[in-house]
Image (cartoon, rainbow, N blue to C red):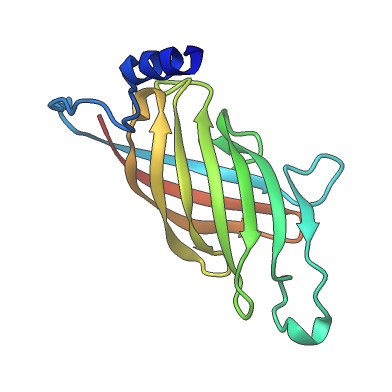
Length: 180
């Protein structure tokens, strides 16, 4: 008898198992386009590197013809500056991961959050997740999101190698951000 009462009670309980809620109209704010210009300063080897290798796959050397090791993963925390000079004002930092993804090329896939720590966009960031052919002097990567003043951002960044040597890399960024 107790089992029948339990079955009747459980059958009366409403089960809410939808994976969505009622669709509501979306009225976005007007779209804004913001152009950003800054320099990405990366230090590869020194007492205080800003980019470090965190993992590398063990591939026999006869399978890897690239001068850059395939499947190497790097973590980065690089300063963003107003100018290319070492003593330029820091306006933020780029934090993320880059993996060398081309077996016979020097393509990297990067996920990097560009956080701004001063100026008009302090507390905001843009996110880039894109293929990055690092040996090309000029290239384009995709902006896929943002936070703060750059919520729901899309867009692109044009990168141009400004200075490269064994220990330092300076990349000029011209970014077009479309956001609300």
